[in-house]
Length: 160
Image (cartoon, rainbow, N blue to C red; front, side, top):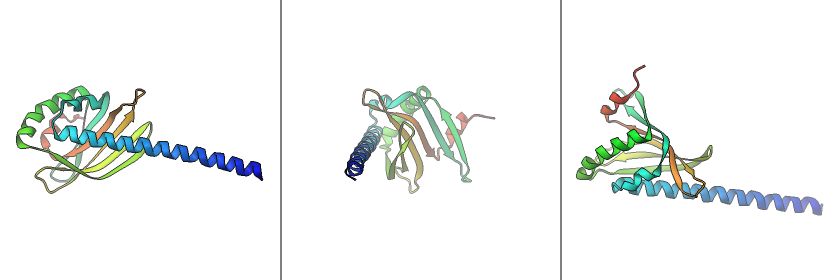
């Protein structure tokens, strides 16, 4: 009986430590997301360092009839588009507000899902990013999906 109790206590301690590690990484993933939001809303050049060079980036265009079209791009192209759009956004003082933020384990990283409300709009759009902790302890965005109502993104959609 003592042996069983000892094993039970050891198992409980290991399980507890694993849960705390999960909670710690999940909290770190959320803190990274908050840092991303701040960088994006202040037009910080550090935003470029927050993405993996081979991140999977999808803009999901919400057409006026409600249908969705995925527009996939690579990190380098996305960064070029981001830089072009930042100047006008900064002049308009454009910002995004994120609500309903959820963090859940996803593969080797954490999926941070939320609803994004562009400044001056009364609608909210779905978004998520997968953030992955790197061997050096830093975090990078390895996947991102962000809905948009900006129809000009459709010109980049794959014509199949």
